[in-house]
Length: 631
Image 1 (cartoon, rainbow, N blue to C red):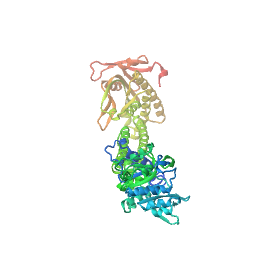
Image 2: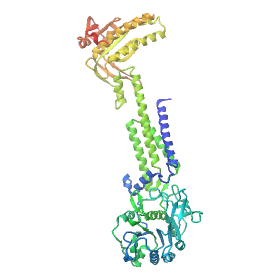
Image 3: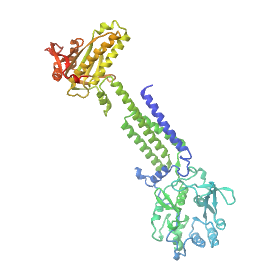
Image 4: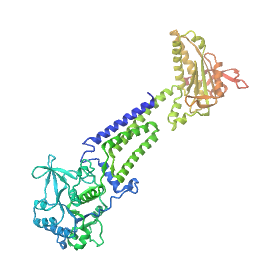
């Protein structure tokens, strides 16, 4: 199995593992899609903010969800209405007869439906007047849902006198989490006063059905866990909270939706009220601070009655958030992490990080665009989390793996070249360029050594014995070369070629080469004594050293190359080791000029070198002047 295939399998396994974790979080009721309280809060909050401000993600020409619905309006029990004696209003709660009088006015104004987001749970004076007003219009009243200690739902019903006079009833509050962030259940099953469980509609659904004149197929509408995902409130809902400066009169040219204070609804002429109310569904609810009917949304706190108005608006306009099928979400949780795994394996780390970040941002942008333009809701939190977690895990795995591979390369490559060369390649920003088939001209010292009489010796030895003794010899020689800052360029049969030094040159490269040669001859003497005791063949080694300019770099083809040196300096060093007898270290004039203050030498007869007109002066190294510096 190839290295690349192993990497794909490992990365794929990591990505799939992360995907499985994300899917479990997505599916488990305790932390995933079905939890009523924390149900994908990240998705809701982000999406609702995007719907209100699509420009935050660069989404242009987005559809507006702020257009007022001309079929809807609000009569607001606001701060200016409570205690407004001019309108015949008292402190809260208002006498029940007040509502009857308002309904009578609305009936004359040709209102189509009136829905109360106010609870009437106990008998009170004036209920008969209120009931008489309810009979004059299509009215829907609200009741409360309660939750027992065992989690069972029950109801606090509307006063029977009023309930019988109204055309419909529906719950306005639920003792379970709900709101813009979580979503609103359009219908729930609860236990009535008689102890029998029954399906109840919300006040919004009840009022909408009265307005359109037929039942709504709730079970066929798109919901998440039985809840409608509410769109952000209209602009007027947010404005209403900041408009706490008295009553708001209507002009005769009023058209489309809007809000009217309760006090004004009781006092303005019927013809003006008719402009406001005719053929509309009007909610009556409170935004007064003292009532505390507030709900939190991602874009601010608004009156609770606007939640019902928004839900009615969505029901009337058939505007719903459509959750993607779970199979689509799960497929994305698997495929996108796998895509990031493929990228991380195939490209450079920096590019992989940028590409992964690009995938994550692109998914968020596409997710937001689908939500804003089509109201299609793909899972954001779990899928984006899977991409991020998978990428982080894969990058960590890659860092660990490449660290191990670097160490392995260092160990393996270091057997052939200087550790400095290895580090130069590994730390390069572009390893390929560091291994390019190019060279550079430098000054360096070249060392050759050759076993004398090896051919004749090998004729009397088995191949296993030859390889065993040569490897023992090479092991000791290479160690000394590395210890003195050189690197082994190549083995040529029983010959060792080394260079001092690469890729960085130092002023004492020639001295290091000579000291290494002296140390090698000393170690060879030790080996010979050991080999005599085990009846192994013994031999001597001739060595040649030359210093000068040469070309250093990668030589070969794109499929196979060697880090080596070429040039006249190399050729001269090769000539010198051929001149050296067993046990001799021969250095050139150029090398001698570099080390003459540190070595004792004997000048030999000049030798002719191919390509040179004049013979070159050579010297035999006898010993180091500073014996303490030898290794």
